[in-house]
Length: 119
Image 1 (tube, helix red, strand yellow):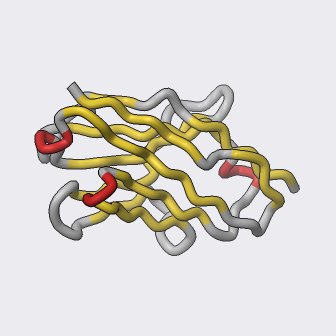
Image 2 (cartoon, one colour; image 1 turned 180 degrees about the horizontal axis):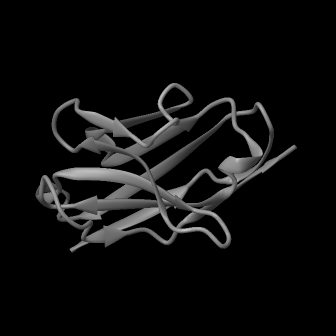
């Protein structure tokens, strides 16, 4: 089993920045990919970014690359999401997720952290 705990959410003005953290614990050696998703009120969950647990490959949702950067620190078993130039439409609950395979569904999810961007 793997446990994921997000932190770093909050209220920020448009144009500002936030860095989210996702600390993994448990059988982290089994992880293949870590990802971030978000869900705004009344909308479906949206893919934000993902990164290989080992290696450098990373992927981003449409229109987010350039403002958002995903990174990881394996020594701390932590994945980060740096969000810059935030817009009100970035307001959502952000979830960290992990999977033990290259493709397919994510096995593990965090509890989510609220990000609110005011105009």
